[in-house]
Length: 191
Image 1 (tube, one colour):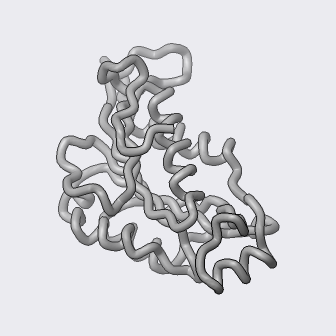
Image 2 (image 1 turned 120 degrees about the vertical axis):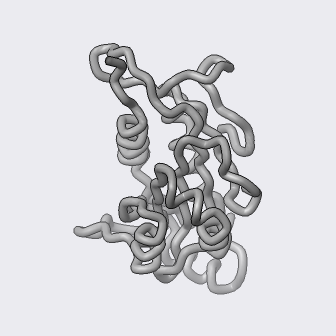
Image 3 (image 1 turned 90 degrees about the horizontal axis):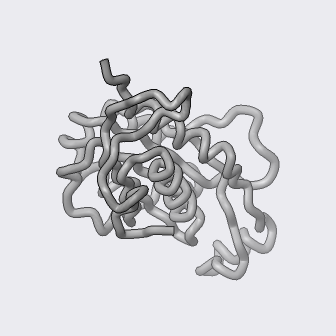
């Protein structure tokens, strides 16, 4: 997995490709996949999204949100945050505040991770996630399952929760499918 480095299919910048019928396409190529993760689950989701966008021909860079000083030069931004008790990670909120003007002007997607156990019947983004998406003109965040691992839990409360609720609810096919939807949006057919 490539964190903090540019991920390109063959070392060169290429347009995102359509998976349908080998169509000749031209699309946005540079995608920043930023994440805010506490125990690594959201980071791994961001890496999977970056890998899938790369497979689709995009130049995807996966980075921790707190390390991103500028979003200039990117054609699209994907931002993911771990959600604890319906709250986004501070690093993701600060990222949105720092880059709000640029995010509002470009193509932006958000995702949340965090639910555990049995899949909820309705996956609805947190109120804060929906509000933040609205502020930058992005669709409501997609919601992915999370992972809670006792070995990675830090702090007393996290360890108590991990003892009761440890598990991995991430659906890698669902994550890949969502990344495909992002890539599809970045694709335009050459006329």
